[in-house]
Length: 57
Image 1: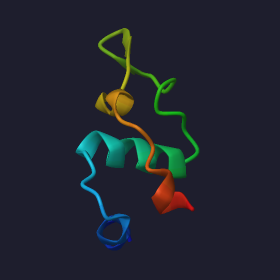
Image 2: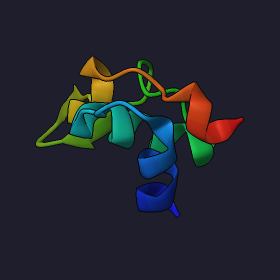
Image 3: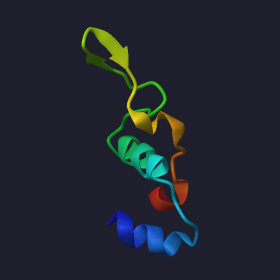
Image 4: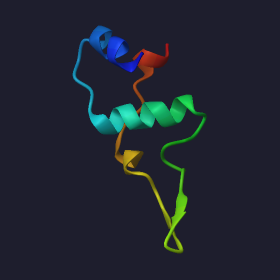
């Protein structure tokens, strides 16, 4: 699904953008999502990406 949508996007997409989009489809905010790792709250590496709204439209 994602690969077909990226081909129709017409521009290259960064892997961080794809991760942010996947988190968004799961109902999570990629900027506020944290998880507990070794006793510390950490954010997934997708916090640098932007949601690709053209795929979700």
